[in-house]
Image (cartoon, rainbow, N blue to C red):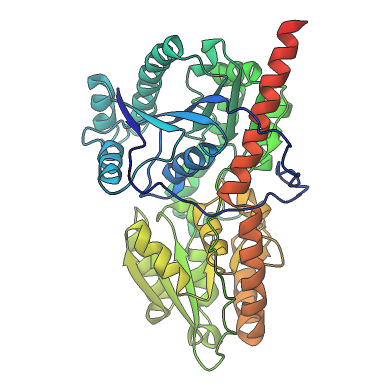
Length: 465
């Protein structure tokens, strides 16, 4: 176990945000400050993925930890399953140049030898499932560390934050301390009607995953037990909330897992210069569910291919197939493939484009969507999963998730709409920044903080009865 606490260096700062009322998620309206300061609670936060230098799950862990520390004393359990321990290295790098904010302590849980072996095995063909064995072993180590921490300084609330997949809830719900869970993810299935972009093998894989996912929702006994132990559950998308309520028999609050750091000083983007090309960014891992072929085929018209310039970030198992598809469709010159870049470079690249396009068919809430909104970049995406909650008509264009050919047509029409109406970029840019403030990490942490207080109040009242 390695503890990281704040030292006398420049503290971490984050973007401020005011929680706004919203019917679709659990962000309550901003209330006037109390006349008396509320006491800080002691929070034990399980965030396996937690890094100041990465996006996705690691950003979820880091940002919530930093922002929650403004309200409470937060101890974070994080770690690795890999032998080279990337999270440990990133925290050491961070400690060399900055410090944790007051009220935040990070406890790094070392991966056991067995955990590292299982992680290496999972890289072999057909052994992908061994990752879940490795992750489960890490969660067992996290429980032992948590038990020591509880004996030293009993927390008021224990929160299992990530990984957000519902299959592995960890073991901290067994500590006998008020427990909260989520945001949960992983319940969305591969939709039907997108097989033409996948190939026969991937269609079969998608069907098998959907079948397995539905079975796991019903037989995940420990996940169900953790949910029924929890005093509050957050669900990342409507599909997870449906799972929690209809299958597990619990209540859940809709709460997309990721957040934004909107720029403090923001100027809306200039109208699109219709004499040039619309600059489009696509970012993500190159896997079947990200479905970049939708955008490739959408651009594959003479009128559109000469009017857009697409920058593609990331790489993966589908990279070569997607590049070949762009060549076959005659739009190779419209696509620039930058590969995997640092998070900092990805953010800079995002900010230099006119619009962010997300073609995913199965997601939680992609971090790139909130990063785009925070930079004032409008988003085109499917009206589904977490992105369907975060993006509205003011800041983007949503396409129905109704089948591959329908999506191609929808994304094509959305791109034409922006090209033919240059002022739309500026208007949607201003609204994107406002939407990002609504979903800022600060606003979301404040909402979670209030929920912690309610959980403690309810637990105290129950104990007194």
